[in-house]
Length: 94
Image (cartoon, rainbow, N blue to C red; front, side, top):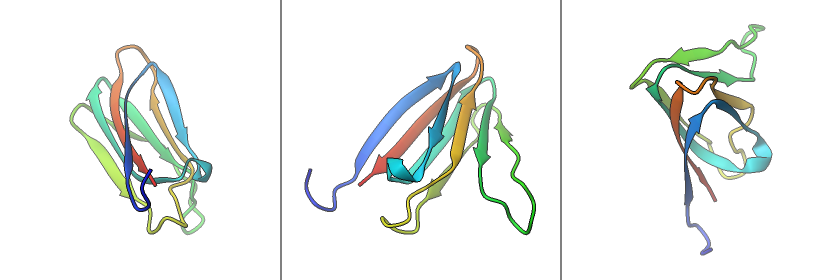
């Protein structure tokens, strides 16, 4: 792979959960609910408040980006819990 190239990964998440950790070296993550409901959970606390899952309905989603290659996305869980829940996931690594 050439230096500086971005390698995209695409996946349709159905009846499963995907967890992103820093070891995965993800720089950009997009999640879009295609059908049913999809939950998105971060792991950070903010001002002493624990995170809770956000539920997306069809045509709702989120994109997050890492600030740099040395600080990849960490602690994200995406869940399409049943066969009727479908999420399209696009992520990039470097």
